[in-house]
Image: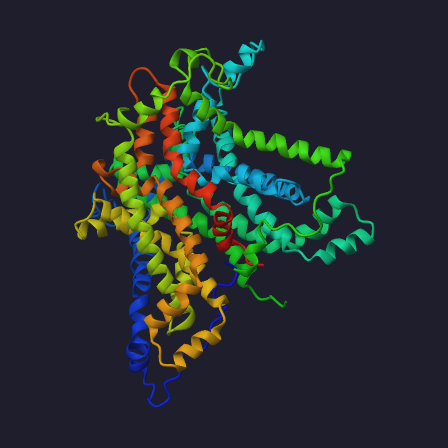
Length: 314
Length: 300
């Protein structure tokens, strides 16, 4: 994903005997290729650009269940930022997002380092760490809902072993439910981070390791001070992918807690869907989705500056 | 793409047979971690084989001791209640098949042709559209959801399988086009040029030269799409309509909207059944799956 905009492609075939007029260039040249690429072009123009602009535009209306409301300026946004449910959703996402990002990245990297020690059964271990990533958020949420079930799950098992005061009621505890979400989310996502990090580790020139060994630098310092900075590209890309995935967090919450207990594990994606299809307040839903879009761009812009900014001299 | 094969091929000498304390610690940590990752799978399987009385004893990690029963599996498949109807997961399974197969075929074909056009037949603005497509992959679905509902309603397909298929095709585009574009760009361009000189056109070069050389990337794309589409919840619940709910939606209904006695063994059997297809794809395809998820993200 690092070479957007830089083409590794050949020059287009030359048809020398025709004068390349502008209209000719746009409509006739490589006409088959243009027709073949037209679904992609249509998807970009209609869905990714058109639908997004439409949603942003209608977030400034008071549309209820149908998009036919009057223009009301920033009213939906004012309402959004004073809504208790939105405040909870946004704070939850921020808390969950930061913990989840740090946790998956650190654990993913540590697992990758362990896997990089020329282990036996490496394929087996990788298969184990990565299989949760093949599962859906719904499946992940339901399994952990069962394991963390306060009456019959982990809590009662440990109590059955004799430790009767043991408490693990996170999914029904308003203060702890986000950490229950975190357990399920990191179980699902760390394997993915590990695979990317491992690929990053393996792409480092073996000479670096030899040089570090000759200089007597301890392994952990080589990882931390030499290898990690060299993996910047992989790390940033992973951060962007994991980060934009976190902003979208939806089905995991639906399956694990459905936003409960009360509103304590609500997230913005759920807020949008709720106002869009259940509560019938489209303007409000679209305002919330526009804020989500801005949040994603806040994550994206540093990445784009790093990737496409003025530098790259290797 | 070439660098992606770096995943999973350790370099250097074979692991030594000698044991030293450091390696024992490394293996210790990694085995504990592996057990943690396997735990939910183990709990799913054992719970689904227990009877309810044994589950109510409250020892979730114990293997099924009293009786091993497949009754929960039968019930999950044929008669568990998904909302108002009680036909089990089987209809949801077939809905998911009806969604996944066409969506995968259509999206992979469209993306392959688009990637090929982007690399070998660049036209004015092609890079612009590609960049937009990639940026589009970061837009939260919630932003484009309602306009898509309106578009499918206009096309008179809202609430049918076709709406879900269309939506999956659209939103699968960014990653798939990226995948094919990068792959085609890594192929030797002389082949393309030679074919052009010989007078071969767009489709002929595509089908006779490009496709036969890129079967691996087709495999990666298909794996990516099958697991992704099978696991989808949001598009299924919004676009498919009650009759066509995919398996994930039906599963969530079975577990989270049950009235009365909660049958945890049936729930877990249903969960495994829903997870089965992506798990089988994952275990069978192995390294291809790893390549699939690494392909878009890592480039040396």
